[in-house]
Length: 116
Length: 150
Image 1: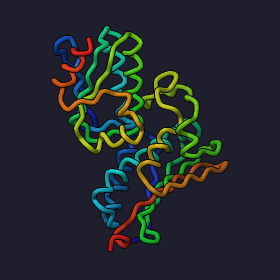
Image 2: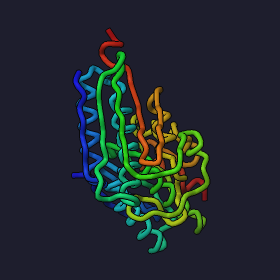
Image 3: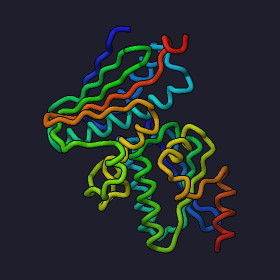
Image 4: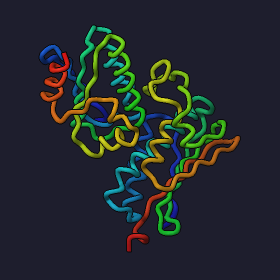
């Protein structure tokens, strides 16, 4: 299994579960899902990366692209990730300053609600 | 350790295979476990860059990877045959946004600047050299191997 995607709504926030590897081959699928969600007026997104086993700059590009799309609608895209090997590429690229990164989905949702 | 060479058709699906092979060879070469994730990511980035270059310029030509031990270091060189202007990791990271590309996660207008992958590689390997010629680009990366650790 290269990449498995799922999504559900919780407290008005669309949570995207990602499992597997996000790279040049699989990233387009995640990109299409994020575009589809935004096109369906979902502008508050949480991407759960806890089961992501690999993420490269192509995947980062997809996440940044998703962030740009929701921000165009005054929305937000936060991440859930505690895996150091995934967080490393965010640190190397400085994107820890761009994305809200939380330890659990519930924490990410709570943070979004407190921003409103 | 003898050199291990891999060539593959420039398809995104093969980049994962290249990552796995490089990680396996690095482990056999004695690269510390704590560095294997970096090897995997750096080789993946270099291969992704090469695949994209080939898909635009020479889709029938294979991408080449060489892996070997040199001077107590595990060395990986990813070479493409796509004619490109000279690139440098630092310069590439600050380059203006590239044009949108299809199929590899860049949206129209490019969420990530061109050359970002090389900047990531520079953050993962302490020895990175990019050789750009009119006939292609080689990205050479290395990590300390078992000989250095002993």
